[in-house]
Length: 170
Image (cartoon, rainbow, N blue to C red):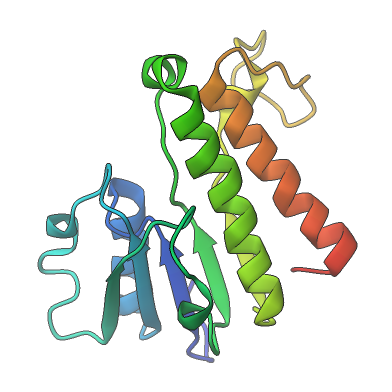
């Protein structure tokens, strides 16, 4: 991720396991970072030691319900990692997964579009392929989501691709 141009990055889900490591890397590369997280699964403690001495903003934000626009001003890249994961809880609480992973994703990509973000990176899930016949699973494998989590991540991916096609969101 090292580049000559320093960027302003926004990381949704930046207090989670994967997100906090991405935040650490972006900061180490000298980028300005804003973290949005509702801490439903992530923890601010994941960023302890990471943001000390680095310019980072953290905001307790639920991407599916809270206002987003003010966080997208002058953002170059959005790394959309926020969402609910895991199969069994998605079977027990499908509405929560739809709200977080589908509605939240739509709201993030729309805010990115409105603010002219230079690039949006979406963290998808291989669960959309169901139980694959081949490992590693190629992207050409048929989509066969078997659980609400898998379906919501696939729908999120489709939303991102649709915004890219219709609105030119990179």
